[in-house]
Image (cartoon, rainbow, N blue to C red; front, top):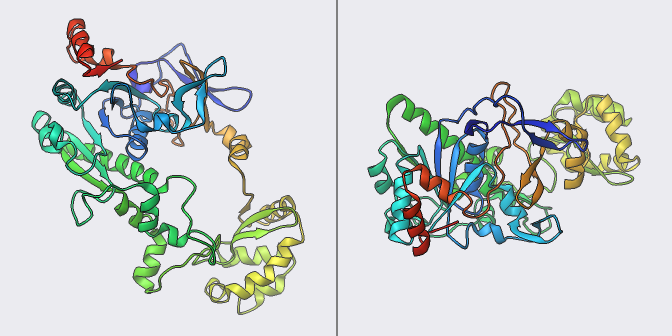
Length: 430
């Protein structure tokens, strides 16, 4: 990252993929260039949080078990291929959440290993972990132990259900949390089976909340000198991000149900079938509905008291949608998008992932990033934060297992002989 002293800026190749390019002058330090993060998390929620902190310039030490590493290194195919086309040990899943970090292979089950982690923690501002409740206490790496060696540490624990409560000891996984947390009851067709979201929604949102929580705790520490423990649970996050659907129940007393692609509070706000595919119509207010009806040649609907106001449209949803379906089905998707955009009505296509990263706007914004990996060039999704003064610098590829072990241990005062002895004992790996 830009805060690590590397000289890098972002360019863009002829395919619209952002590339990390060497520049004549150092990039500005990232906004978190002063922050050091010790990351004992794995899979997605924790690594997503630490990747964001790394993107913002923090130095992130990813602690991994020698010889194994993060579980997601093996979650494939697809795997990154080398110049000969042979698969490497780096899965696409692992690559998606570990940019910007240093991999330090330490076996915390060995006394020498957890001593190293405590020693490294004493140099860090943030400790991030997603072990089961109490899982790190037996290694002397729980909050109380780390606080003893670094009183102002910000220690963030991510679990399925939190540090307290009747479910605290249970393991939690994104899929089951989407179900338990209500999201699957809202996702899918009304008569179909409950559906999960196509990405690990609960994990990613938990990672985002973890990042926000860490930044807030660092701000508190900088004002007061006081560290603290952040207790973050996937289930809590999933309940929180039910957003308007949660308040539809809490305020209205009606349990929300699956509506397919329709919106519970706005109509028409859904997918419609067209002559050659589908189109999204996202009418957000009455004025937009009037413009939609004018563009679609059904002006009478906008004047009908059953449909003129959004509240009436929600009450008469089924009747209105039945009237609109044959109108939308009569023309091609591209025709509708052109007509509705010209009329100022929010609308859009349904792109697959290849179309997303081929889209001119995504290409212009540099949302695919090409980085040089030891196995060869790899394209990764970019960070959506665009800073005017401290831009994200993509200068540290997702690391090979243990790639930074020796350098990290030298930096905290170990000499070559001590490192060799640790390697021989199996406490570390490179």
